[in-house]
Image 1 (tube, one colour):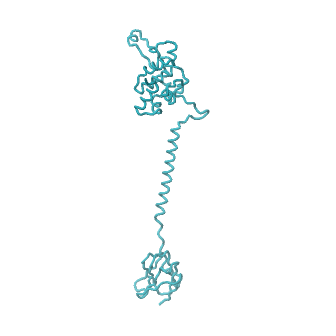
Image 2 (image 1 turned 90 degrees about the horizontal axis):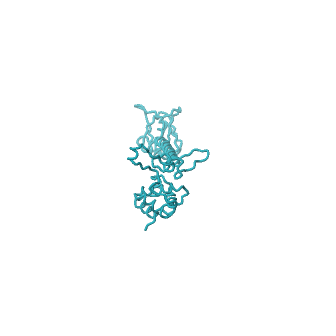
Image 3 (image 1 turned 180 degrees about the vertical axis):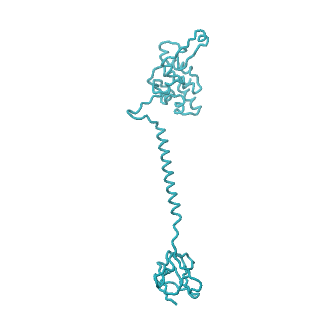
Length: 266
């Protein structure tokens, strides 16, 4: 024959729930439920609580709570078994009212304080006075729910991550579009004699000035790009990449040899 604990454990596992889930549903501490399933009923509480918890847990698992309490008392562990009081007259958190008697005398029996503490809908079940669910408060401090603290920390962390992602996105967008380099170019007019600059590779900066110091061209050149310059006076060309610039004149091209090159006027 199965023990009380074996029946409780088998019924709980058959429902596929954990001790923690059962404790949350019944409002009975998980260590008490674990002791019941291990056939340990000495939980350092008054006898009324032991029987009430056992009955509540059994009913929750779809077992007969009355049968479990009867079997418990038959073991000689309960006060009722020792004193010989009738089990049917005990109050376990609910009040049986005889309708006929109530109508005749308008008498309603009030539950005892111990029974009120076991009432499923009573305030004491969820309050600090219930020894089954009581948790001491931190001395002199706030009684904060650890679950709320964890959720708050996770929410704060998510906000920080979003802010960092936003800053990174703004920086990435601003860095992906560099400002266009300023280009100075004096375009030759119709009839002006010209000389051409041809880039065989990309050049960061080329500067061309005439004998008066006037800037004829200043800026970068893309590979294959060509710029025409007025050649009425001497032209001075300066660039850090002379090997990437060719001078075109009369359909012929000559490479620059130095970073600074003076082209004489025709």
